[in-house]
Structure formats: C-alpha cells, structure tokens
Image (tube, rainbow, N blue to C red; front, side, top):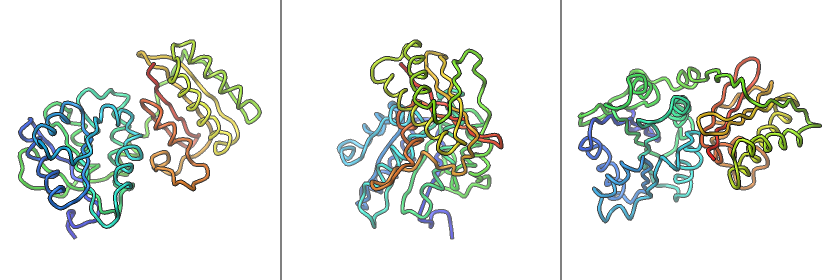
Length: 310
C-alpha cells in the first residue's frame, strides 16, 4: 500500500516562495471543492490572505483560520482546530485541511511543542479519511526544523517538485521522545507545595501572584482555571501532592505544576472531550486557555508549564 492509499494522509509541502506555496496548496483546496469534500485552511495570516486572494470567490466555501491566533499554542491545534473541523463534518466524506503550525518567528520555547504536535497528528487521525497538508518554508526555517518535518510526515513534497514521495526519515515517536526535554529552571518563581488539604490555598496563591505580576480580568481568570486544573490533576493522578510555581518572563506570566505522576498517554489534553465524558478535561482546558503549554515527563514525575500573555 502506498502512502497516498492510506485513509489518513499527512504530507509535508516544502516551498521556497509564494509561487511554490500557491502551486502546492491551491490545487489541494480546489480538488476538495470539486469533489464536494469539506476543506479548511489554517495558516499564518499573511499566507491566509495570499491563498484567499488566489482562490477568489471559491474562498467562501473554505473554512479560513489564522493559525497565529487559532494555533498559537501548538497543543491546542489538534483539539481546537483540526479535530474541531473534521469532527463536525458528515461521515463518509474525506476531509481536507491545510495546516501550517510552524513558521519563521516561532520562539525557541514554542518550537518543541510544534514538533511534538506534528508527530502526534499521525496518532490522532490514524485510520480516518482525512488529508492534512502541512507547508514548510524551506528558505526561512532552519535545517533542524526541516529535518524534523521529514520525521513527522510519512509523505513529503520537495520544494519545486510535482509529486510526493515517502519519507525515509519518518519516525514520529522519536520526535515526541526527543522533545520531551527538561524545562529550564525558574529561580525567581514563587513556589507553593500543596496536598489535597491545601489545594484551594494553592490556587489562591497562584492567582494572587499572577495578579501581582500583571494579569487582570479574563487573563487572570484563565490563570485561575489553569492553576485549578493542574493542581487538581496532581492530587488525583500525581500521588496526592505537588508544587506550583508562578513567575514572569519575557512579558508573560508562567504557571508550572510538578508532581510524581506518570503521563503515559502522549495525546493527553489533545483529544476533544466527548459530551458525556466525565472528567479528563483538565489538561485539554489548559491547552485551550494558555498561549503555550510544555510538558516534561520522566521517571521522577511530570511537569506542566503554561504561558499566559497579559
């Protein structure tokens, strides 16, 4: 069976300029429209405008999303963008999505989450009639990112090429493991160690520190929810105790929770919750609220760090 014959298709499209970008993405979108297949485009705003102009009136039939906003946190993209669109479509028809989660300007803190996201797409959509085309700027992105794209995509379309080929470097599990990196220490953070008995106090301490560091209004409410969900997870799944840290860096407020729990499911927090599902929404909610979420898990436990911009 060739890569294109599989139910789920996940090619990486490498492009060097606007012409190659349009040559690779527009036929993909038009083929979906001609086949009556639902199609969405989630790419950075400048590329979204480029595609919209090229599609003309046909753009009205496409779900258009600015990935800089919808996918600012890479952990939000699978549940909040890709699955949100695919799951809303009638069964029996292939769904097509152009998704560009990596662009020049992604920060060093964001990129590991981007690479893991691209790797986890394969498990999230395995066996489904979905095609997700992921463009990569072969000029502005560094070689490490381009090499990772070969490891996270079973199929690649080289820059300027007319067709696709199987990736000989495909190994998404290695990418997930490789970017399971220890997170840099925060020496100036407020630290509060909590148990089930002091869970409420932990949340109040985190929110008070967030307010002191400049969060207000909705963003302070978001921090309250993030802290509540992460600390509750520690009590329920992480050995009944943990520690929460809150600090500011680079104009953002960070909230981190560490515990002795083992996170066995790499897709935790990336699956949409079923309507009748009880529990299991904590990490998903954190992904939907925060501007970035990074995780590190090892034999000593799990650390979850969330970034919020005032």
